[in-house]
Image (cartoon, rainbow, N blue to C red; front, side, top):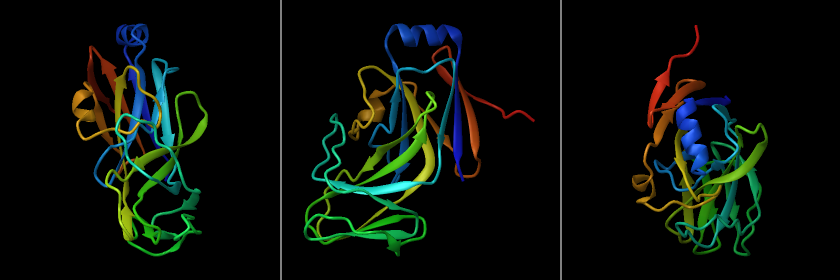
Length: 206
């Protein structure tokens, strides 16, 4: 099911954010953490829609470096929840097949030390669909199996000098002020208002 977050910004806050070149940032929770800026937008307005369907792609990269942008270093394969794919000894990810936990995506690693990652599809405030990394396993895995569990929970915040795909260290979200976590596990749409430097929930229209 496609999920939608509507972000509204009060006019005075909007002017302040724009004047200081703040980006509107989204991160998606995977394996109970946020570690990649899924999308960072500079062209936001006072009312912004952010939408994502349950579509995923699996990749791997050699390392996780907080502050750097994700570098996709293997081929990319389409994959869904309850599916698995194998990274062979040559470093090639094979096609997805059924297997692994039903709420997770599984990588069978026959290659060696590697960091699995997930790409997600999202349509941002500018209305364009993008496929961008949303998670990289922060600790490189050895030979064996790794499970990646994405949930429909996102973090939204404003930050300067940040780009889509930037990897976030364990202290990154502590340093980001005014972040809001939005849980769409049991609903398909949610609205939040940013006003006077704080977030509030806007009830859906009847």
